[in-house]
Length: 521
Ligand SMILES: Nc1ncnc2c1ncn2[C@@H]1O[C@H](COP(=O)(O)OP(=O)(O)OP(=O)(O)O)[C@@H](O)[C@H]1O
Image (cartoon, rainbow, N blue to C red):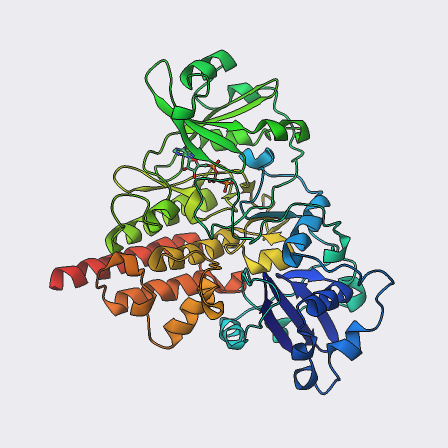
């Protein structure tokens, strides 16, 4: 049995197989009490009950009235799913991230970070599960509904999870609920550069990187703070080109004329930093690929944490999809961007000195050049992949952005390059449709874009999936191939996803077909 419902901001999933039961909120394994609490909060206990549970009376009598300790019911959470993520994050314990977000990102950008539990969750192969999930109706919630669900699971392939173990994982209950939670999880307060609906980020907690003694010497640009002040004209507001969770980004000109982007960490987060860059950041500084934003240097002095990167002048892919730039991206440009990103990820996964998993592939981390070439930015969550022979994955806390997160990684805490493949699949759908992975402004059944797209795809309506801003007729067969590839990438389990190299090759073939179709017209 597998039951999965989007309620308000949360995806509630119950599964049972061969006598083993598991409870999930937003793909995070939780104990049954937390699950029941969520059901009660959303007033949907009855809907999870009766026939679908094999004749049992339903959650309310079978589960939810059982072992609630006094006081536990007194206060329902305001944003349950987010609390699950935050509570888990508080217990973060794992090391090993190599990127800039060793610095704490400040707020509200959708990134998720929490530790692996004592148990692993369920494995869930098969695209047919996606079909099943599409059939699940959404419930009316007492709150404003903003879906941030990913995909549902397959009961037939569930690992054995004794419920006693399931109860040992971090739960929503563990959170004190003190944190400020935005009205909608998709709204980003105080960020002028964000459109409504932009995914929020839960700030990663301070990393525990080993400090490199040479930290100020990484990369090819070595500045001291007075040079940074000079280059940014004392961090002049007129030079601000972006605002992220981690800090403010300035366009700066160095003495030799080179124009760079300088990211300055927000002061309020400096104190929470225990250690900064991993020595492995030196690895990132060595990475050179035309579709990856180059890390040029790092400055650490007193309260200042400065990251210097290549400047990419034409905004983010998300801004372009939002129509914030002069021209709307045409299909050809979108296809080229997808190919660029595929090449960047292939390089990271296969050809870098050590395998690197980006972990935060999303449209707002794709920067565009004047020629509309794409560069993948923001290695804040990047991680070195498995290093031992025969190792298939690393087990680590979950980081990434809601909507792009690989559900299998989220469930099992096993990270592989296929997590980037999943995010890339979601990104292709975003590139083609223009829609964010989760869009709270859409009708309930369209809010999880991958589900909406898959449903339409199955009904043969690929043309209707195309971004209406494009105003362009694209051969339905080409679109079908693109969407089909996207769904393969976003398969619930990694074994069903192609690797990035294959994805690049397939995109290249699609490009050839597209060129042919255009030349025939
Ligand atoms: N190398 C760069 N060149 C040009 N603009 C950049 C560069 N890096 C960042 N920006 C701009 O600054 C903005 C903020 O970047 P940053 O990487 O800090 O945050 P973000 O990725 O938007 O947010 P978050 O990392 O919290 O998701 C970007 O959206 C982009 O507009």
